[in-house]
Image 1 (cartoon, helix red, strand yellow):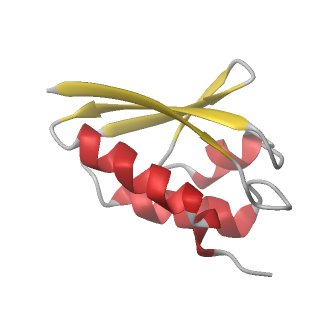
Image 2 (cartoon, rainbow, N blue to C red; image 1 turned 180 degrees about the vertical axis):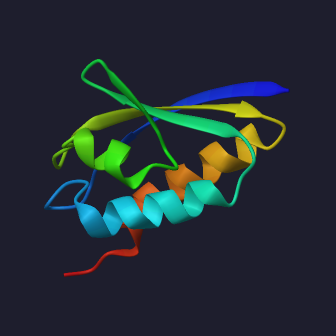
Length: 91
């Protein structure tokens, strides 16, 4: 079982609001690993929409990711790629 950590920066103009957060939850749900996000001292489950929304992360926020499990590395890479693609949200 592996543990992988990384950090991504929120690129979306409106931050991690409902639509990008939903995309993040959908992505995380594909993996068996436990995935947590951390921001400003809060740690939430990446598979929880309410948890992510509670972070209230704005544009430019640096969000920590930690995944633990057999597919942890793939999970972190997928979330990093999603964040680079602005969580598939276009305005």
